[in-house]
Length: 149
Image 1 (cartoon, rainbow, N blue to C red):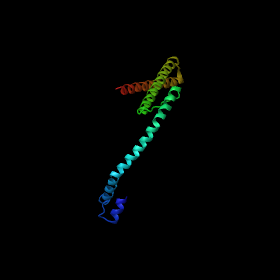
Image 2: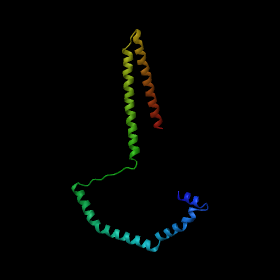
Image 3: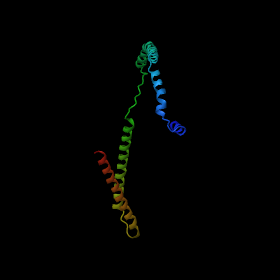
Image 4: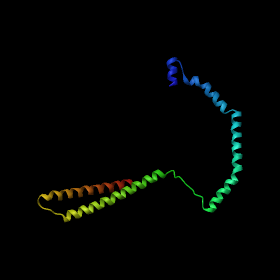
């Protein structure tokens, strides 16, 4: 936005050329001997504070471990894909059980229930549902086969 405003006010404006000396000065200032020395001094002070507190912290940690009060928590980087895989497997198992149950139930109904006359439509619906459920089961088997390849 600044470059567009600069180009509007001055068509020969070039942000890179304009900012280069300021960026160079900032970089040189942050990498000067004084700046590096200050960072080293601050780091040394932090390290000295850490070293002074370290034995007490180790003793506290050891005491917690001896009393059984120490708990460890870990975070797996690959946890989300792993959980997603478990959910997919559980969904496939549930779908398989449901499909098999519907196939068996509709098969038994189709064998036992043989109406005559106007009730023949119900029998045809049962057969249609059976075909639909068998097709769903085959689709599930193909999906499982593809996922293992």
